[in-house]
Image (cartoon, rainbow, N blue to C red; front, side, top):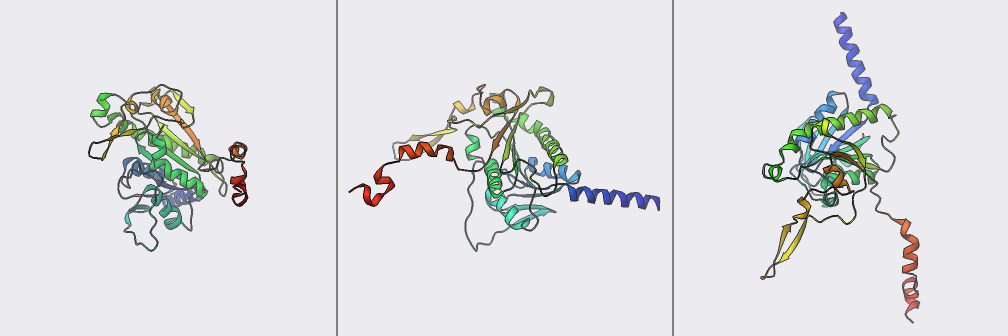
Length: 299
């Protein structure tokens, strides 16, 4: 009888925690069976969080914020387990299926995109499916984290498939779990778990914990080094070529540079796509009669 009461009390305690904990939707661009995503769900669920995965059926790295827009199309969704869905589309599609389908009536309090295999700093953030899904979530009104683990840029790592990234991937997942715990302790149901209208892109170094230098808040750099360029061929075709510069370690005062210096980088984003602070400049540039009144200005 005493044992039954103890088990009942534990069950009630777990139920109460779930009721007071944020509901979490995990997406990514690596695919619905990615180690960084599946392990994150397992570790968060083991702590009592109500956590769901809705991710692309296949690897969609580098596809940015693209979506599939085909009304009345039937999608072959695969369910891998309890609260674990594979959607045949892009990361943004998976986010949409999560918040507009699976969790339409019980929306998440937090979206986590990742943990991604490889960094999303510099130009990579522009075309990242991981960041793209998180930005889309913020634009919808859902607080979001985009989380990635970096690379060590040397010949040995590149030739061997980035072994340090895979070795310390579990540490990056644990870091996210710690962050969710920290946020959850300060959160009250019905209130935003992050500052309203914002999200956070996190890049974790591929290093052991004792070598991580700290945290650096840093904007994603403007005018980043492109990842590729094009060579025009004699037959009129074009060949895409990887830029050698993007594979060289940087120590610049940028998100890429600080990640290479073994800092965890935090880049805050808002998904706004508005820049009205420049309105006075545009008013000055474009204040001509033919633009203000097209029917009158050219007479």
